[in-house]
Length: 347
Image (cartoon, rainbow, N blue to C red; front, side, top):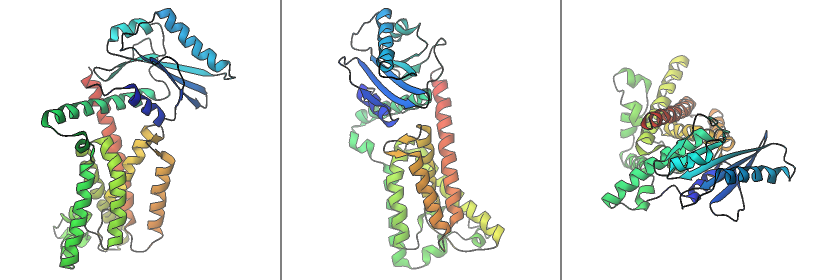
């Protein structure tokens, strides 16, 4: 199954703010974006359908692209060609004299940059390698799903986010029938930690004082969590959620020890803020735009939530700060790990 289609690659360009330039040739596609230094153009050649062009034709085409924008008053025009192919040697012969050309291997989902070509182009090396790594994982999951009979719909459901929401809701419903039993046993309490009840660092993440507290956390968790889960994968996302919740409680413990202001607290807010922190990193890693979100919007939402907490009574703000810092950090570490793994996998 070919999942590296021009349509999907085009959606990636759109997410990064590039607009499409109409073309009469389906094998040649052009996308442009205005940078501070001028106009950047991504020139995509689909070299998989028996297409053949000579080196002279290729050079002439790139010159025509630059001339097109110069004729419209653009002084700085930077053109990068991506050759989408399943025969890398054929593509290499076409562009070996062009420093601004990379090869996208549609069979192995890898980006090929030869030593005579530029090492990066406005951050696109990281963007494409991360995108191709995600396609590799998706291809493996699709093959597994085909073998086991799972449908595309079931694969795309954010199962971890849905399960986390369900667990929080179920625990809250149990609390409504048992009164203070679970709160007394599982809420975060520093003095209880000193008595060996360290499990409260975990159990407090699934307790909420009231329905408003539960509802606000679960709405953010499901919708924001679904995006982060799709990008990171289910198991890494679960790890991020738990680590962020732990970090929120550890920050809370540190704050209470410093201020001698001890109290009982509960809620998934630390973990939820961690999910938001991870989303902020992911958007920033995608040059400030991911799906319908921008880094500015996500940062503002986090800042506004923190502000509301600091200006309200009875809110565990230390847990919020700890959660968002941990979420951002964990997402960054996971991204670095994926790049290192990708490097070694491709030898």
